[in-house]
Image (tube, rainbow, N blue to C red):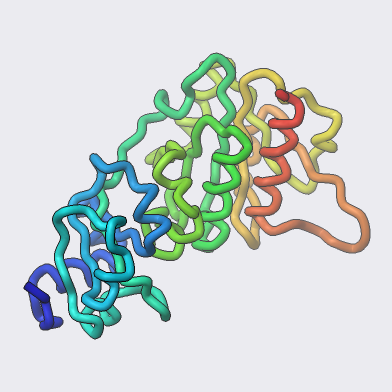
Length: 254
């Protein structure tokens, strides 16, 4: 059966999950769009699958045995993209603890404070996986990692990178220190990161796009570091900074 009405209850639920962070948190579910992303979702995390009518023949064997069919117009009305690929999945959120992002003998953690740009957030999650980060901690006030734009920007890394949502950042930073993890803060007043040793357990504080780290969070760092820059540039994009730092850790540990 093809769902052709925008007032269908399933369609209403999809629309709410696409648009509302509050709805996603309450239902503990989010939307993933696109055939490539769909192929990377861990199967146990998939709650439901929706395909637009015209995409059924296009995807053929890539589709599971069971899915719901939406008319093209209804699918487009729900989709968050201008050119929908015709497939979306309803996916269960994963829950992580502080301990779960500190796994392994040599933890490597990114701590993100009040980062609000969805594109930056998605890029950090993707770069973190590529650079071998153990896990990411987010403060309150960060962009919703389950918003459609963040999900797309991660290119599938969200399914594999542990992300812990901190309720109390100062306490959680202190907990990391008690685990013998050295905490570094990215700051314009820091020392060159190329003079530092990141081969032991480490965590890095990355601040807001415009204001950087808050004073209290910066003071919580064991050491402040900066990325050396030439020219008249005062600072780098938060996602670029996090990526450069992460890859320096990877370089030192190879």
